[in-house]
Image (cartoon, rainbow, N blue to C red; front, side, top):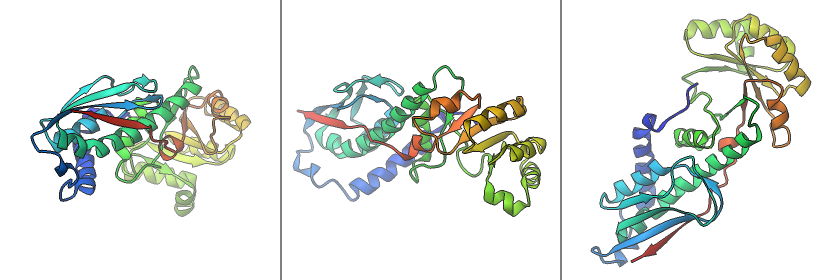
Length: 282
């Protein structure tokens, strides 16, 4: 599946930001009203820890929606790796607007940069193997596209976006359809041209999936030896994806088996938000 780009996300970003501002600002920022409406200010946003940056467009959208008079001057771009205490961007405009937009803007950038940072960590671990690390649907509800974009900023790749753009046939689907071959055949009938991926738990099931014409076969928690055997059996007929039980300790070894993909839920599920801070100057 192709990676998401900002061109795909313009409407989604605006919608994300509208929802965030609605829940945070509500009927109005009463604390910001302590400041005279005409007062102007400058601010700098810094990171307190090393990170890979993601979320520039979300920050821009926050201040554009809060007050279009706010100017955002970027010192970094999505995908940049930065050290602690680096200034990420400067703001100038009405002081009320800077403070009203602060939390929503930082929330987006902290979370998305956290995803990108984790993804870069994993991407670095498999550098040179040729494997592609994939995200999953284990995302924050309402922020899936944002998180999947952040995955690409960190050097990893997007799996299917949702339940609509590709088949992923798992154990329960197979049981309900009556078998591997039956499930794959039904998928090809229902949506010709959509990628068909099926999960297998043994080399015997892999043989069935390949014979039935699967496009991608997910090897669920197979041993390293079985993964290497699967690559030999497959001989390029389908793409092979390793999944389940992948850790820092096992990731490189799995990549070296020769599988095409490794999917890791932790890319979007186990997110450590990057520590950011805004300093206001009048």
